[in-house]
Length: 426
Ligand code: SF4
Ligand code: SF4
Image 1: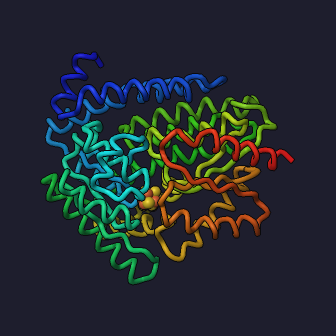
Image 2: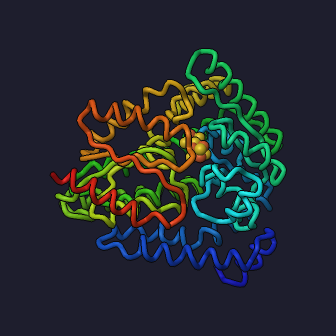
């Protein structure tokens, strides 16, 4: 997109142009260092490079063009918000979680300092006028997952029109009844906002589109089980991040194109790194774009990440929604079923996640697991103790890391990761 056109668009969205320019410069430099410097990358990562280069340009323009046509853009911060429902009213779903240390000072005037970096970041982007996606949204959907987020929405709704879904914290029958009613309440809200009725056909089409996207991501993950790994963890994370922004049909096609190339690599025994490179699974908090810090630290220390047990990873893609129902109610039941299977650490107890981490470590032939926790994230830091015990029983080494979005602790993280890799090599 031409620079003058982009500037005009950003101005119309009310962004702080000077600060935004600075942000794009910093991100461009980071992308060069973390992504473009990689050796032996699959050629079809080109599409994803292009998406990143236009992430605040062409894609935002697509959203604004869609709004001109009367479609609604719906933002969200969490896996519990079903994209299928947004598609069923011909809307566009975008992920708004933010992964950069931006506007922190301003955010800390509204939020306690001991709030996780993810929450501070989405506030910071909004207050500093740096996120074209937030500005392009007609409605933001929040959820009562962790305490930080659910209280943050009480403030965020003063900055942006926000609707909050109630996510239960157990998986009991009563919790399921509440969750099913919340799915129905969101469906009604989206109908009201869009002026469109959800029909069995429109909902099934939404389910098929999102299932197809998840199947493509599952295909990518399955290919990463090969040794040597055909793609880096950094690139796989990037793809998982882009799926929250890109058009779902186009994304699915492009990801299959990439997987075709990866399949060839696997057949030919071509890896992004040699076969004896230590293989690591990352588990824990989501890494929202452009949070590439830990994968960079791990892979530049001599390991390869082969899987992510994360919302920006397999936690978000492993289960599909059944499209067997023939009425809207039956399809909403199927949505409720699938979404309540997500094993976020806000649930208690959460044995599925513990089991799944061990299963993933084995399936991906990971020599060890790095548990990634954002500072001040109580659900994941508490659960890390149980993760450690369950992996110890399975004989799988674990490294627990707690960090934020700043770069100050990179040398310490490198030292700890390098020591862990030494253990794995032995
Ligand atoms: S970690 Fe939990 S609260 Fe955060 S995005 Fe994932 S499901 Fe939602
Ligand atoms: S990282 Fe933890 S504290 Fe932060 S929003 Fe997610 S669950 Fe909440």
